[in-house]
Image (cartoon, rainbow, N blue to C red; front, side, top):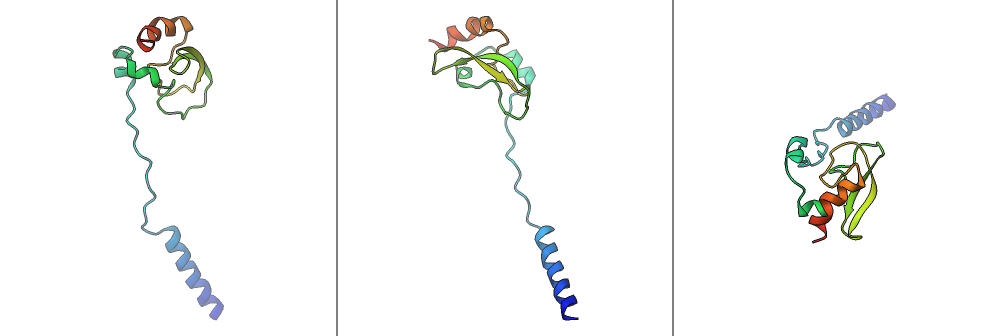
Length: 105
């Protein structure tokens, strides 16, 4: 009888820990720039510091080019496939044509 009572108490305590009212903290909502507004606006000086994507959640490995402010030139990078930034170019010539005049000044 004592064993059954102890087991019952254990189950009640364990279930309150698992199914308690404490809420699991939610991940902060990211303020990602949507594709339409990203495509519509020109490349800006603030884009020079960005990586190739806003949030690194996708796992593809698309070879791309981006401006690197440390090296002051367009460099190779890999794009995961989601949430591209303006600092994400398919061709090195495009990166040099668009980013170099804005970022190197």
